[in-house]
Length: 150
Image (cartoon, rainbow, N blue to C red; front, side):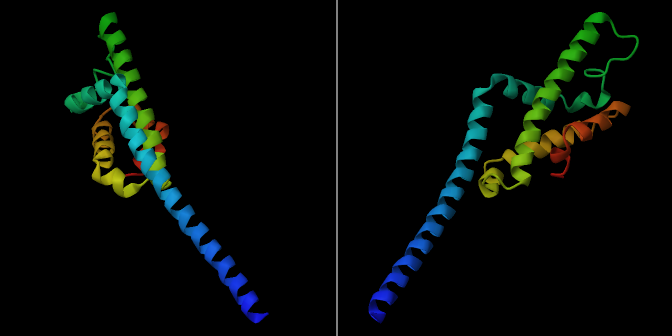
């Protein structure tokens, strides 16, 4: 009888341990898939890539005129600035989602780091932090998780 009970207990314990291990690796796999999905989304979205290229190449947005026109700007300059501002917001919203996933550890942070995604997020953060305009403080309200990655 004792042998039967010990065998049953061993079987139950083994099943629980196996289930725990399976769950652990399943969660790890899902976190990896999420990082790969982020990369895939970025690569498939031409607008995200174009916006990122624009921001990274023109870190001169520190002068602000390309997103915050002054009063002497023409209507075309104001319209272009509005379009640029919308590009910046769209890209920032995407980075905010990515930063939220990173900060909540909903994704594989190691893979996120080694693929260069974290450095890209930080590069964007550096670019928008260089904007010298009174309205630039709004970005911290728009993207709190992104600013917490500093």
